[in-house]
Image 1: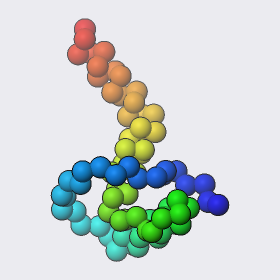
Image 2 (image 1 turned 90 degrees about the vertical axis):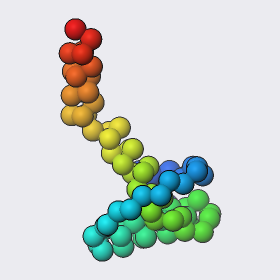
Image 3 (image 1 turned 90 degrees about the horizontal axis):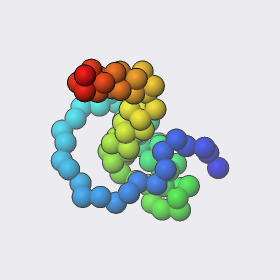
Length: 78
């Protein structure tokens, strides 16, 4: 079993977004969705629905962003 960074996708009300992706990135999202679906015992997830959780995980794990955000909050409070 692969150790994926992204877990199961929570079923939530969809929001329509228009976005252009490079073809290579789209192929990677399709492959990731297929692997994620296999590991969860489900059909392949919609690859577009992977974008938000991936971005959330990326932002949450960016230490530089977290530090800058804390510093910005401190400067507003002062």
